[in-house]
Length: 367
Image (cartoon, rainbow, N blue to C red; front, side, top):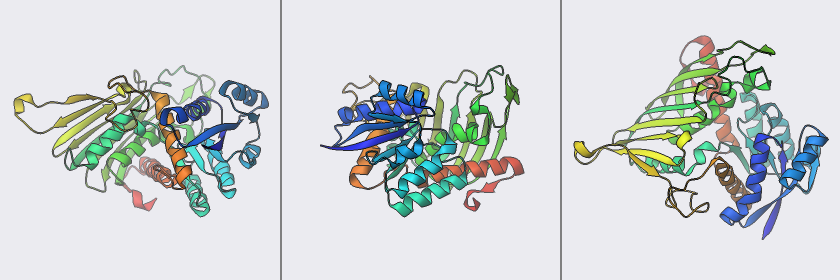
């Protein structure tokens, strides 16, 4: 059995999720390539050592360049804020190392283009962390659409809504500073990626981006709280999306509705183990949405549990990502979503921001 030394940049929320995933993925999926937690990097030596001891890494550092350059770190996972992504990825690619980068791909479209160029010039495996589209239910939705089960897609509605800043008295933090950390930089990329995966490329759009609470205890808010967007997909389907961090009552509102000429699909991440499917067949009196509980018959479910309806959770999404990353490293072939896929999401974000400023429809191809 072959091992690969994993270095994780960042030990906080997502750093922990990736460390846990790398520890579990071999047992869950019986991957031929097994990860070894080699080194973790954090903002201080104290926190890095704490993460090392907690997660089971061999070593720790507060120097990201040392992490990337270490010969025992054979693949890099970037789990830090957007502004740190580009430099770390470029350094790793220059050394011929595979990179998994949390979304969004860099702090700007310029960053993501540079990261794609570095990845493709190096020939290294690269992947972006869009975890929600990897639930067994959403993977199954993609299969249903691709197989023509609900016919030609005519309409899509998607949202990524949460309420972690719904209270105007919540204090200002790094999340309320800089557009890269706003709703269009933080939440919107997940649903935009989902729309691209489920429906296909977006041709044009019009958007409104807004700050609801301009000031908070401790500072001024310099980024957006919520945004709405209408779009037209290249396949002709109409689309609507809404993104918010001030959506009171919503905890993980990654949800979509898809209408086709033969049926429809509904999904809500707050009930992530169920997919609602409508088929336009049979007597009208017996038609209706069917709630499908995910189970071993659905993608990437059975390795976690052999019982249908028992369900998977958030951490399992990250384990599925780890499996795909290890498979890509083992085969030398990047697996969707690649850095180029991440850049396509950033193009939509840049287009939406420009549309909000100009208050006009924008062609995505011009970005």
